[in-house]
Length: 136
Image (cartoon, rainbow, N blue to C red; front, side, top):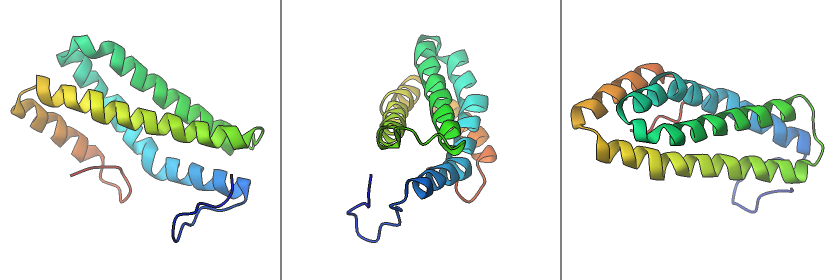
């Protein structure tokens, strides 16, 4: 691992501190995001877009895999950390791209504006914390 070459990076060089930073960011930001998707967005998509059930199952599996990786890392399982941290990053990046490029595009093209407003309002109502991945 090592230090990022990005200017003013606060990425620590110590592996335990790297894990702590990932855990903190995941707990503060992504858990609420995942929970909201699973409780409001995914069921809504499955109901209105039955052809996207397999995609929703993939996204749920991504959530489970990411939670599992963070749980293992946070429990002190630092074996093969040089491979695990990049794997976490790739899984997170792939998940985000799948949501942005596949799910969100499908939602925007397949549904009416009133439906988009409805789910948007539901999601916004449940993502009110200071660090919540909510995009305006």
